[in-house]
Length: 192
Length: 367
Image (cartoon, rainbow over all chains, first blue to last red):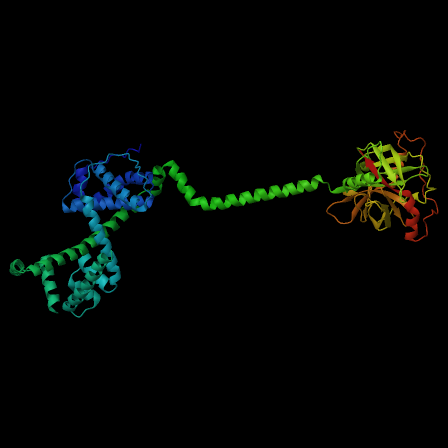
């Protein structure tokens, strides 16, 4: 049914190793290699190009994080894993959109599935809440928090950047911002 | 820095490994003894963990988007979009525009069809309308009249198809009218202004000139006397005043106007164009000038244009009478040509009309 995707010269295990080593080059190759397959699947199943992009990126993120955590086990082909995860993610989205008729057009093997997606979904919820909480935090807290916790800047750097008198003041400010963020974050959950 | 803040920073240093070995082991000992501290550490670890992972996720997503932008997206979409979906997506994109275009097209087509139909209808009824009068309405009243009189006639009253006007062209009972008035009828009768009805025979017909000559074939007919008018030889001039007598109703009707053009509809040389009000029933009536000369015979009027009428040139009546095919006429009729003074010269219009009345007849064509 579908077009046969050209097999790459990099083996699956080489891909996994490269991703674990945080090689952007390897990740890039993997990304571009398997996207057409997911694009075709989503388009064939009532999706748009944007849907395909979203689903595929979510899949790659799942893969990457499994690799980083060291919990990734390759039972079959990497391609099969990607297809199967994308498939499940897409069908879940379809159900939400209530356009799902029950018929799925497949053209690849579906591998056995485990629970990694459940964990992934939980994490996705957290991230969503965090994103909202950060937005609500506003400045200067948002940048302060992001600089320290996400961009791994030191307190000394932050003190300079924000113009605090000394690091102690900066630390106090950071503490206050974090407490506020915490409040906002949990409020998101309660709100849900 | 308050206590909470301090505790927070101890925990943070612990979590990030920012402690000296002594501090670390000391803290761990505290943890093993203090359950609340332990849970506080866990909660802080969890929360800041989400925060840092969130950051990592954001940067990963940014990287993936970078890769995505490097893909040949248009090509891929084209390649993998199933044909029906391609069409469907195109359809979805353009369906509103297509619907509007389709509606406009339908409106335009039906509009122009209606318009064309209207035009066709106009065309069919011709731009020039012959002025015979349809007598259907009269038919019923005639039947009523006859039954009232108690006539047990052998002859069933015939239905009158059309009516028009005719006038005498000599003193022996020959009349001229239009061909179209008598066409298709097998008997024609005429009625004088004083109500005398006479049977006639159609002795000559000329479709091209739209003329017909009738002969009164009735023993009760008496000559009306010499014609008070003559037939004009000289071409009338534009603006010249004209008048007509005719029967658009059952009583004689006078109308006047003027010469508009030396030619008829679309340059037709058999007719003149006049500006004169005429109606169905006027066909075959005489058109006279101020001196009482007949210059034409009413034949029709132009539709959609007010007051435009056409009259057959009297010279064509002359031609018709000189026609060698005209052998059914027993003797040649000589039309009186313009004499110095006819009976109508120099008198007022009302007097002219009074004199003319006896020579103009209703023509009724039966089937």
